Image 1 (cartoon, rainbow, N blue to C red):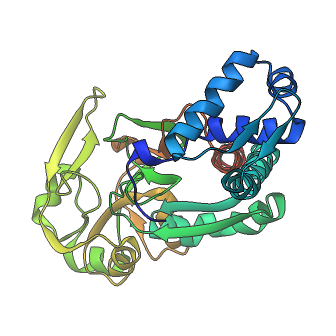
Image 2 (cartoon, rainbow, N blue to C red):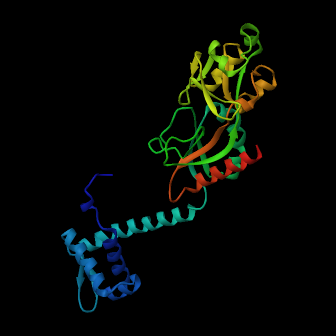
Image 3 (cartoon, rainbow, N blue to C red):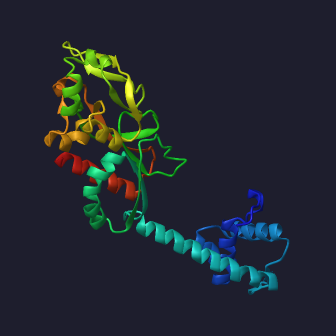
Length: 304
């Protein structure tokens, strides 16, 4: 579309009134149809002709006739107005029906191991929604990158985002039997500084692992990293391979713990829980596709 200043863009209202005058055959009939005064209709037409620099109508006491310029303008304007009305009708009809592309960001492990289980049911429930899934831990810009929603395990830094909690996630500190055999098992979190730790960089203050004291207060243990990564799959495998101690949401490590590939070092009560949440921009009118996704995830989290 060729760029032009806003002052040069034709006024849709002027064109619409002109088309209605042509279609009804008189200023009076057009005024009745548009619920305007005859004088107001005349002003619309005069303003349009003045802006275009051309007479569009021959006015007589008995009838109106299109000039050559008026005939050319009417053919183009009526077609454009018809398409505009069709577009509005199409949007209105689909406004309450979820559809279109839904762009979601989620942590790699959550997307691959958990969200993937729900995709079939979601698509069957909402066949008009096409999914665009970004599996990463980076802090995405929802507006700039045109994401509809993100799933994260943390509180939002951006206060303009709406956060809906899916569930509380317990944290667990664990190591493989091979690591414990070689290096011993730390008796308390305070002993972690003597061990090799696998640090996830997707959270602020990544080297400060938070634990709960006996009185319920929180305190940080500063750890050193033998491996530093933003990829949770890599860190889980490194822990299974005996390369260090790992602290992550238990949800991500449950299978490895059940298979005894990883061993929790302490009770979960030693670590505060995190929040798994779906975040989306604050909007007065939330698109139906986003509403559908948020409701679906909330329903799934209740049954999980």
